[in-house]
Image (cartoon, one colour):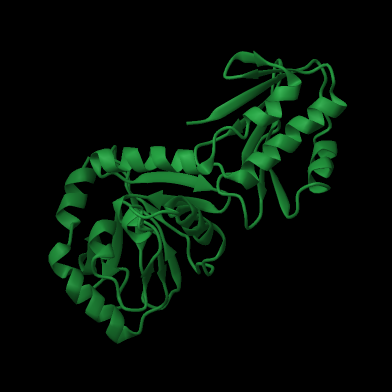
Length: 278
């Protein structure tokens, strides 16, 4: 669920001027140009979702998304402050409804992370599903096990959820390999080959591929495992952070072979072949 504020103005602003204005008011502000007229802003270490800002024919649009936190909304507030002070002919619309300039900044802060978290929790619990959301540093996953981990039946769980997301976004070690494989055919599948000697941050894939020995070029030597199965058979030094994100340090030969032995009975190669056959 997004919140879109439309800024109607005939003027074209200088994006560098806006960025300098924001940097002077927000510590550790980061900006990325996503397209010729589209920008993404976030506060390093603090933002959960970031802010989208882009040019439209009538002016500009500012968008916050579900689970935007106070750091995200603060960026949005300062963008609006820029227009109020430096583009005074601007008019504002929230979800299509006109809003006076003196009220628009407060409206962006009406929704809170905590309220959004309650909605996410309701949706997840309704059908035991997992939601994939994107933050400044990539995707994170919220599902039933996350709510168990953060003890969502106890007070303060929304703060613990935010802390968990920020950990996934900013505190994990670097992955030595983010390369994925893509299967052909009409049923496109994303695959991740997991080698024993590599330090990974594993995410959600259609299948993770492990090998029965150190020969990685032999298809017959591979086993195909789902994230759900892997989550139940993690080596002792691997750590599940959210629903699917795993901090997975390199394994010794003995550790890797033990893991593969535990996973053999769950091999999904036949399912993969049926799903991807032409």
